[in-house]
Image 1 (cartoon, rainbow, N blue to C red):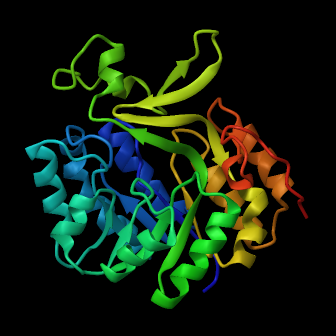
Image 2 (image 1 turned 90 degrees about the horizontal axis):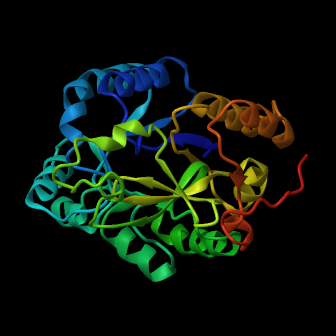
Length: 303
């Protein structure tokens, strides 16, 4: 299989029309093979987008993209459970599970495992594979050595392993909504305050250093993961599927830059410059891959 780029689901609360137009542009312009669509953070956001999903699905499939519908990552209420069941039991569609409750609903139907679930070792991978998983997107904290081990473990099951190579990293999920609490609101009466932050809300340390990003119930990195310098090495390990997680700015530049590096049209250093010139105001990081603190940047050998 040749190297593929996938586009993960939008994790932020974007205006519904902007969300729709983003996926229309993906259909028309983005060299990605697979597109993940669906609300993965907060069930309250989902109804805002539902009316656009049929048009988005049609537009993407007409453009030759494979569409996978992603489930919620944190299931704590009856509303959450109903939403997961609705998606996970949809016949004729590919589903990405981001919570074990989706696995219960799907049984052993072929499905994807998203990076908001955990797959840190060979035993977990075997459980997912025997349960029907055909593709697993690994957690961004896994270093190169861990990826190598999981590639070997996946081979007997013919499971594709995917690695996130761009975008803010999901670090934790909580039953409580940080976004609402920061604005002195409760989760039930949040008034969708997260829509004020199209790339999440910055969280600083007491000393004023940029530290993390808050996205509803999700804690993300402040830095933007960028593994463009590691593509050759990961392909040699056996990774052929690379995920880009959308941000409000620079996503299409990143998609094209990664595609051009994979096609030997750009060097990694040239691609990095393009992405630094067009993106959100946050540094790049690749520390986890190199078994360093995740927020750090390690200069890899580039061609």
